[in-house]
Image (tube, rainbow, N blue to C red):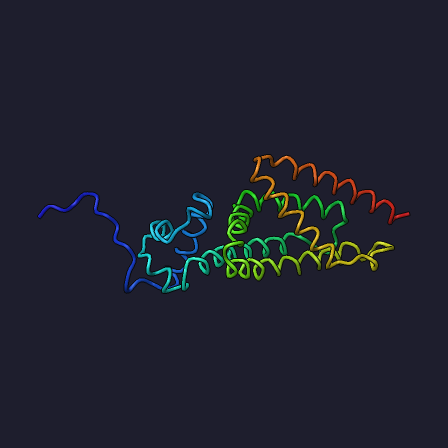
Amino acid sequence: MATDPSPTKRKRGRGADPDETRTQLVEAAAASLLEEGYRGTTARSIATRANCNQAAIYYHFGGIEPLLIESLKRSSSARLERYRASLTENESLPELVQRLEQLYVEDRETGHFALLTELLGGITASPDLQAGIEATTQPWLDFVEERVGVATQSLPFGSMLPAADLADLVFSIVIGVELRNKVDGNTDRADRLFRLAQLAATLVQSQAKR
């Protein structure tokens, strides 16, 4: 009996490794968000990319929104690990700004910012999505607050700076810039902001040495 030279790939179903299925669904959800956007990301688009039945989404995650949050969580955890591995406590303020700019570019190139901004577009219609994003971003606020404290501890007025407020401000600026970039596609404004930050860091560092 002749065989089909190009058989269709069977969808993953019963008997499939659950961890592998979860990973494929998370990766498929991220890919759908990046390629189709939040509105175009459906159970069908995710399941097609993961080569599984749509029911697997609800079986493993309970719904589409928890799956989307998991895709953001995994991306966020990987990027935060990268930041922690890349930044040291011995960097001067100018060096810190320079390194943060490099990591920021990586965030954009890996699609992490795109995932976040796409999901932010859906929070007004979904309290669950809003809560998930808030929980995912809290480790970043803690990390930025920690880094602000380390970077300013050697400054004469360092103890007077509200690290938590500065962390919230920095994070808000980054999100605002990325949302603005989605409006006009102009990524140059981030470069300009980092140049200003580099100038400010250099001035603060020079004053601290006097």
